[in-house]
Length: 85
Image 1: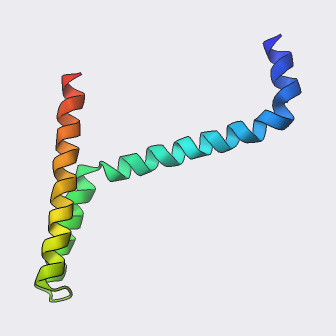
Image 2 (image 1 turned 90 degrees about the vertical axis):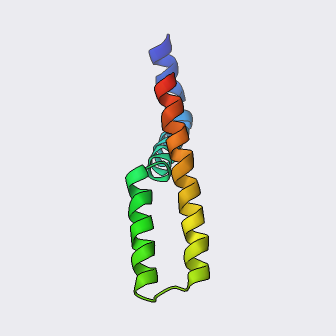
């Protein structure tokens, strides 16, 4: 009965399930990028380089650095919590 139900409801539920699947994949990718320690370290190095080259001022550098360091702290806390479970 499950196959027949799936077949009959496919015209309605098929597109909905596809949209949900795509949204889940986008969310997974966004989470991977948000919690990628190497990416944050790279952003920190790029930020320092831009500051050293005079592309950004000290205030902008300090604000961005603080934000990136906070993200790095959160990533490390999350990794530690995952290791414990």
